[in-house]
Length: 71
Image (cartoon, rainbow, N blue to C red; front, side, top):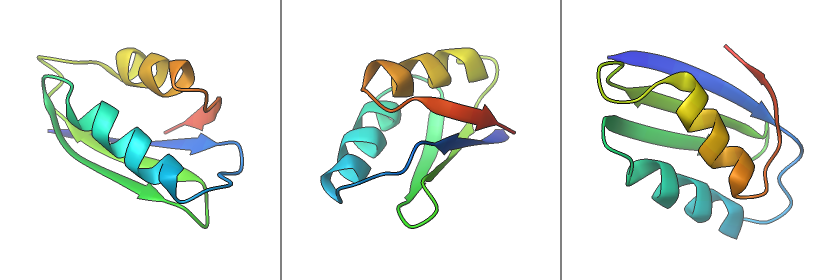
């Protein structure tokens, strides 16, 4: 399992958390998703054999939350 953190633009509503967590959580290979509302970060634990960081980042961006950086 690999863990990646995405820094997003400032999150403005708590419903953003559920939207991001549910969409990433549905992806094959994603084990755990945690959205840190106050710091606007998303932490994802996933299986690199099934999904990669770019796919995760694309999903978050398509939901309307631009990714500023990934680590």
